[in-house]
Length: 71
Image 1 (cartoon, rainbow, N blue to C red):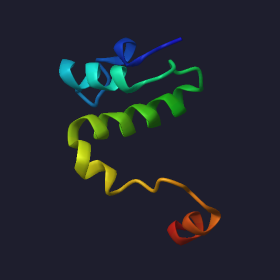
Image 2 (image 1 turned 45 degrees about the horizontal axis):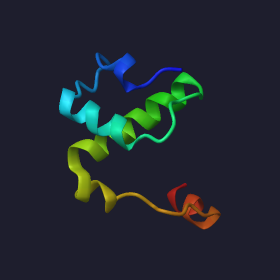
Image 3 (image 1 turned 90 degrees about the vertical axis):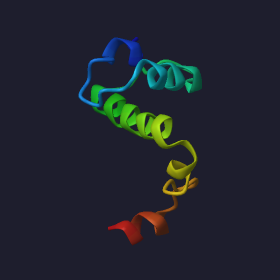
Image 4 (image 1 turned 90 degrees about the horizontal axis):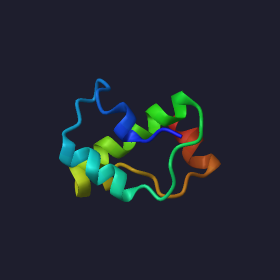
């Protein structure tokens, strides 16, 4: 299974400190498709960079109503 360390040269240009932060937060390695991995990497990269500010933009529990509002 791949982790962010396998993809550290991806176009996000994460710093070593950010990669270490992301890997320390992960409970299990990725075992999903590459697209899901990329989306998770972007999300975790944003969290690593912006920490508290990032949390303001995340919906903790997605409901069908939340999804309909977005669409």
